[in-house]
Image (cartoon, rainbow, N blue to C red; front, side, top):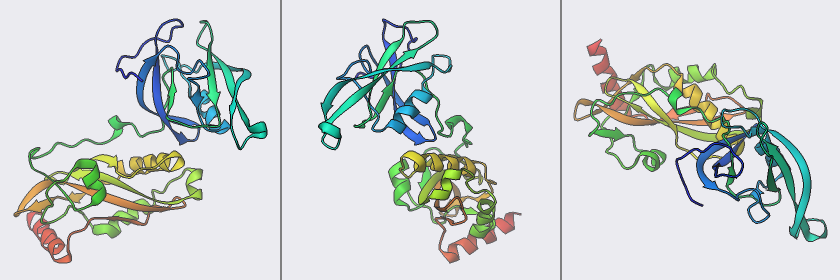
Length: 290
């Protein structure tokens, strides 16, 4: 599939932008990448492999025009029998929907609800992913000298960086941080169905400012959506952090918040703390400055 960064207008008879998504649950699909194709989604061999009737509905619900307007879809027919062992008569059928954008000629979409692969669509869509522009950005004190706490997930996300002598610590400690998350739980009803772990990486600069939050664990479907909701809650937390130290100097450093979300509760949270003696020295130094 050819990749491009050019977004083309939705016009029948010319190239149409195609996007690759993951399903996030709650009738939402996440945009990952896009390409161009004249035939994708409009033939038997190039059918959209959504994997289930539910995901077929998710796809149709989230189709949008070039200006974000909802499109009209009408089920046309089924066609194109193919071998499928678990099915009746060992055969599956493709669903055909006509998609209409304004008054233009409708375009036929062929859906395979039995098989699944990374999805592509031909129009802009909405996404439940927490918007990157909403995440607090911070200015590094020294872009050439960034540290990270010792954590495997962070290492996978930001690369191998030097460890500080003293890790960034939340003012008031972990118990104070737990108070915030005890009153800022997940409110989505679907969270009541899950116990799961997720981790948010972020940076604390030498001034104690926290930002550049990112999800460093992988998840799909509902769990990915819930992780995005946790990311939003973390991004809005009180940002009172004590910066990391190396050789007695305050430095920019990545830290990580790890959650075991239990039916929506986020109280089970931790971060990479310094050894007890190091933390005491750090707090004493902070008190001296105050």
